[in-house]
Each structure stands twice: as structure tokens, then as C-alpha cells.
Amino acid sequence: MGIVHLAAQAGVRYSMIDPYAYVQSNVMGHLVLLEAAKRLPGLRHMVYASTSSVYGANTDLPFRETDRTDTPVSLYAATKKADELMSYAYAHLFGLRQTGLRFFTVYGPWGRPDMAYYSFARAIVAGEPITLYDGGRLKRDFTYIDDIVAGVVGALDRPCDSVPPVRVLNIGNNGAEEVLTLVSLLEQGLGRRAVVREAPRPAADVAETFASVDAIGALTGFRPSTPLAEGIPRFIAWFREWHGV
Image (tube, rainbow, N blue to C red; front, side, top):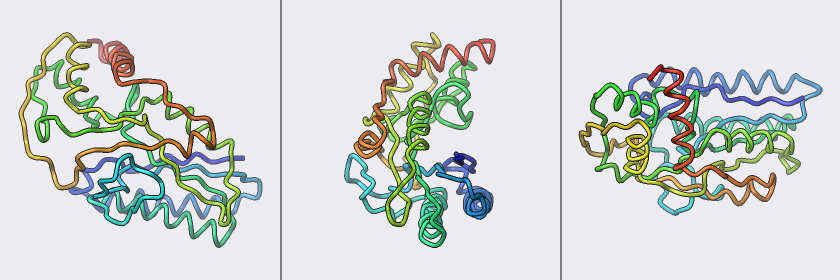
């Protein structure tokens, strides 16, 4: 028996608007799952979602699991780091085998409408402006959903056997792309130019994310296989059908 725990209040910017929702969903919600999991006698492994945001103000690239994660720049990041710490405590106290996966900018069909790639697509189709921070020069390690699923399943099938039995692993595309590149691909796929307005980078946003995937690769054979130039057209095909564009 295994648990894949992906439920959360996600997103960096909304955590500045409703911080209580993040503590309730991410901290209390994770605790509820830990308490339930420790009571399941047949449980082999629990995999849960953490985030690349835990790297916070770290500027050493690519981000590695051994890097410091005690400088969060958003409450969202702080709540997910709290989840990692609680998981460590439950592994130590109750032998609860767990793997936390630090997701890097997941995108694709059925994604979160508040994420940049999705909200940009809707705005471009509607002829509405999109906001680019720092001229669109921010970089993100965009990771296609199919690659994420492969990594999650691979990790779930390999319970942690360390002492205590807990670990964290990056799961990303192992590369950083400018947001401008994302916008260009959306424009090409949708056949329309974006209306752009620029703004300074918010304090809760980092300049770049870039995942080292050596650890999850060594454990599971994980190798991301979907570059942004392939993933965005797949998303657009779904987007056109779902929204009748």
C-alpha cells in the first residue's frame, strides 16, 4: 500500500493575500495525512509534494537537495519546508517511510489556471495584457506533467530505507528557460501576439530555478524527455479543445 499526497494550497503570490489558507491546507493538511499514514499497518511508502520554492534565496545553480533551504522568500515556501520537517519527525518517531518531491514549475493539460503558462494563454486568446516581470527575463525549470508522473511513480515504487526512512528529491526538467521563451511559444501556437506590460519582479519571486535531477535519476532512472518546445504545443492542443478556441 502506498500514498501519493499532492493536495495543497499552491502558488507563491496568493500566499501574500491569504496566508491563513496556506497554513491550514499545507501545514495542518500535511499533519492530518501523517497522522493517518502512521496508523496504516500495510503502508510501504508515502510520497508527498514539496516545491522548488523551498530553495528561496539560494543562488547556487542548479539547485541540489543538499543546498540550504532555510531562506524562504514566500510563505508558501515556508509552509512546504514545514512539511518536510514534519515528515522527518514522523519518519524518526514512527518509522514512516516517505519521499518528498520538490516539483519545479509543472505545466501541461489540466494544469492550474493561475499558473503563468495557462493564464497567459487565456489572456492572449482574449486580447488581454499579460504581465512580464523584469522584462520576461526570469528563468524557470518548466517540467511537463508526463515527466512528473513518471518520476512520482518511480519514487513511489522505491520506498526509502535510510535511517530515518525519509528523503527529499528534486523533480524537474534539468534546465532553465526564460519566461520570454514561454510567451513566444504560446504566441506561435495560438497564432496571436501577446499584449505585454512590464513590472518589477515581486519580492516573493526568485530570478531563476534550475533542478539537478541526479539523485532521482540514480534512484529511479528518471530522465525528463519533454522540452518546453514540445510541451507547450501539447498543452495548446488540449487548451484549444477544452476551451473551444
